[in-house]
Image (cartoon, rainbow, N blue to C red; front, side, top):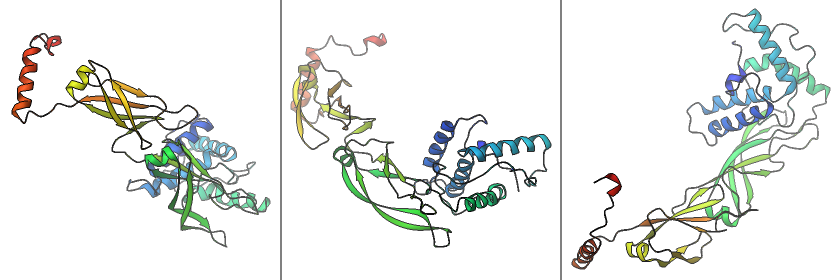
Length: 320
């Protein structure tokens, strides 16, 4: 059995703060959670990540682990032949408490069990198995329209529970989720009491759903702002025009394209983005669309324009 470097597992330095540990765990959980990851070894990686998070988020476990790591570094042990020395955990009390992170897999490694398994059982017995359930994390993908208007959706996910004997097991659950208007990518929706069951009459943990918004054919999302390409004709761009634009909520508004508008010019419709304390805006990016020269009339119009604007050289800045 090899000694595990939990800091390396979470891609952290030894002196990482509690906030650093939390952020590292969330980042890796989003990448390797079996419900969303396409990585071939996602389940095994997630088990290692949960195990490292369980130790480094618990002050007692982390202190004991750091002391043991220092002891191993000083004395050394044959590679692949680590065994915890007797009494290494004297003076420490370990338990799985609130905020330790979701135990998404049925068991941790032999290394973890050799260090903390018996100590946790002793601690749990002393507390008569009274502990709040652990929190779970998952991802939910919604349509832009749901983010704009709010909705109620049913989701199905794999979740871990415990049986009557206290052993972990997997089950498929269907939950009703209320999506508030204005929710944005990366935001969490909390479902109270939908995490792991508590012990000894203590409440269950919570389920945190990370919001992801599906790609939309018209709009691109950046924080609370929406961006849309707006095609205009050369004459509309050159002379100015009033053009109709669809809005994310389903209505149509008329916007003013200023004269001499250039390709890529940005028009802003204030407050037409995602809702919030400070609502986002809808940004229109002008794209000048050239009519195809597929008729005599259009070709003649292009020729007339070329003659009328013969002094215009769009490559002048290139020196040619």
